[in-house]
Image 1 (cartoon, one colour):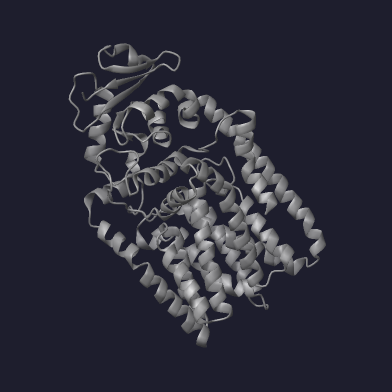
Image 2 (image 1 turned 135 degrees about the vertical axis):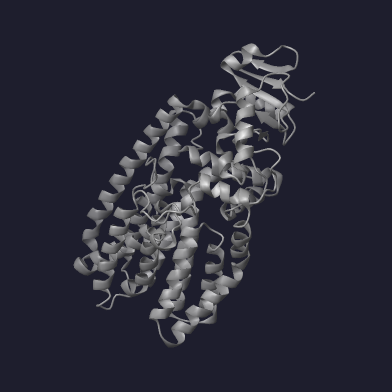
Length: 479
């Protein structure tokens, strides 16, 4: 676990001690998740940290992780952004412990359970931007995977020793995972159902009771999804994100992952002939997870299957460690594999840090806004009221500004991920591009934050802030 902590802390430490900067975002998506945490922390409700006039708007996806982090910030007094950064190290360490514990419960010897946990944490990223190790993105997928693994551990406890205690534990986990994205709860619930079908007697009944308890606890989330499905704005939002849209052809990258899943299933089928608890238990979950990679062939609905593999990789790593245990039971010789994995992880994380450095150089407004315009941020925090609306034309600034101020935005790059109609989205974007002093806006805005050439055309009257060093200015739109 110390190795995991070190490797996940490495990019943050290098950025802080070498560059003197806070590595708050490894990719652009990070700012979206972090803004949700900060918005929840300061507003105390499901406020939209980006878009004005959409406070407490409907959500098409649960934000249970963002809520947990915001409440954690409230209870500990730690700044939300700092807590997210700390979680980048804590969540992978907990994932390691859960994979280790699951492996031990399923019959792996300690060194091989350790290897499975290390492999799960240091598996290479499958994201579109393969910068850091997979779980450096702490909110999604790291914490979602952590909840999923906790659920699977509870189900394995029921499978091994059915009791009211284990049934309650597994049922609670299955209910909680229903408040995460579809990739995690489908694999957990369908896998548990299939495991019950493969089991007999008391074990089958205990698994079915756990499943029923989970569905009861998660019924609020299921009802929420059904309710939102009838709303036009939600459907337009999902279409923009290419979620639940029609399409039977395999999604990009789904075929190689599906082939990998089939190969793992073949290994599990072969291993299940022997007294291998890990193989017997993991078969149902790997079947459902592998099917979900290509479920659109039957359902005609695409769900971004590249997220689905996040559920499968920790399970695949237990399979890999289990096969090694059968072929190579000498525990002492496993140190070579562990050392090699750590070296690969070290290379990936150093490369991640270098990629972040290039990102700061190419787009400092996105990756280092707090150091690019510190005086402007300070002025906004001192002179603008909490919740006041800022209009800015720079996508990178609009993505990062909610991380450092309590302002909302007239429009921003990431508002397309919130429930909003295409008509309003286009109207806001067009108004932001064409606005000039004196021109009426279709939606409320308090300030215009200009950068560079924007400031030269603003009249002195009502230009309440100007900083030549940072090439910024703030114009008061409403008197």
